[in-house]
Length: 215
Ligand SMILES: [Zn+2]
Image (cartoon, rainbow, N blue to C red; front, top):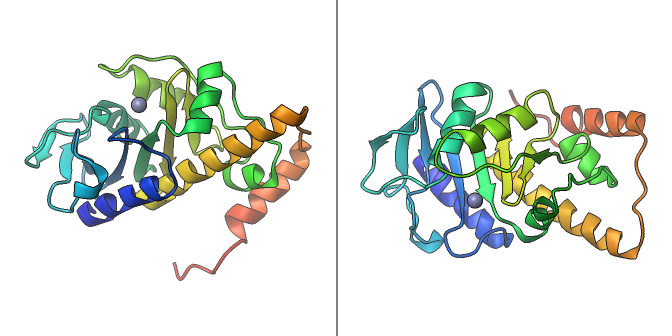
């Protein structure tokens, strides 16, 4: 899990979701009340399996020579309260954060959004770093919602997945559709997709699309 989480940070860089050290990936260690997360303030090209940090579900450092990401409390809150979540990602990716700055959910106006998110990408509350406020905002917004990504107001994106790779994919797709819908908005009013078509697209993509899993 240390090497998986370390390597996945390269995807944030590859897809232009982060600048400097502002973005992080974490992954739950299967069968343990522990997760692996980025060390605070270490640049992406210096991340290795060895300098990843292990924390418990209260966000306390368990193993590692660095202090954990400053977003650790939010990741820990999600793992504590959403047992099916195995990966969490946070970014300030440009277009998605622009929607967050305006306090707007991204409406479901692309089939790719229906596929991946099953509807709009919702807006979470404004929350300050330092306690469980951000974690609570993420969980309250995403619980019972199909979307695996939330736009935290005036802040940026948190995404979740069954594992860290799935959470990274949701963060990448969130920025992609945020950009396209933003561009569409410049040219006019994007057309909504009827709910029953969203439901059919989501069901097909989640259950039929892609290679058959051996599991
Ligand atoms: Zn942030």
